[in-house]
Image (cartoon, rainbow, N blue to C red):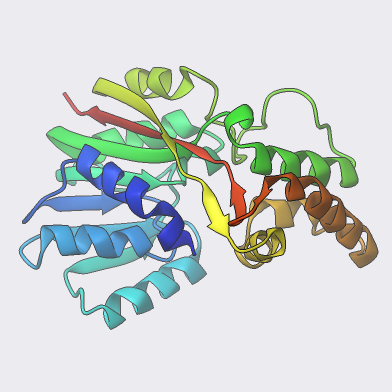
Length: 256
């Protein structure tokens, strides 16, 4: 479901990083390696791909997915996006798909990525835009935080899904980190499934931050929160199925 949802945005990100045959590419916060597979196919066996993630279980899953795809020129290891440990590695390009917003210190992560690139190397990332452009995430976050007894007003907290969506923020962070030729482009990426319940099943099975907010609650309290989300998300049902609006920001820059 994630691969189908992000297919066009993923290609746009790899294009923005100018990834091509024979290149050395760093994939930060790679998760299960979906986009890593696309990178590896672009660079081919003459290239090098290094995929990192902070979660050992995700790295193991990525390794398995890459092995089954026969992409032996990809290596994986555990690393925090805020301490990638690739200084001076001389990558031609780096990407981060829907990972930067989970960093408590995204500027530190961007500075580390910059140091991993060769001069002229390209970086591209996808992050969620602001709450108004991502109403489903905003609804679920507000409901989950209220049921968990947490504040629901004010800007998104650091490390949360929408934390980098404020207009101008990503451009400022990239420039402050030292990138040049910075661009930030909004992309409409709606999530389409047959019904609202299918969407909530996806959210509940995907290890989402919503689960983290609700995990401390008793089971009956968690279910009340999910029921409220379902009622509020039904507004996005259409005659063709359920379609949740999402907007991502495609962010890119070059190491001088």
